Image (cartoon, rainbow, N blue to C red; front, side):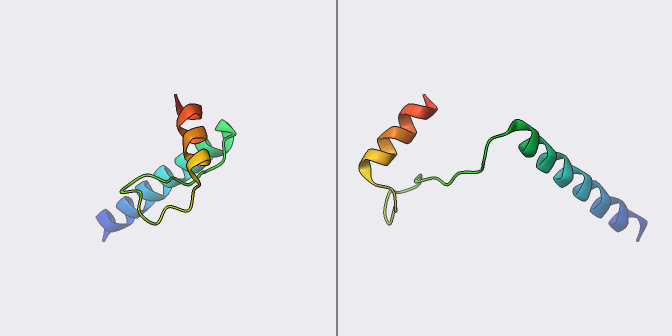
Length: 55
């Protein structure tokens, strides 16, 4: 039982650390049009703009 509690606590601390890093970095989460390209809601122009921003 101690191992389970320690594991849950460790995972919680790691998740909190990732959340703090995201907040302090100042960037918002954004979606992706990756994958197969089927059913992508992004327009062709938006995809090109996203690719240029990442480069």
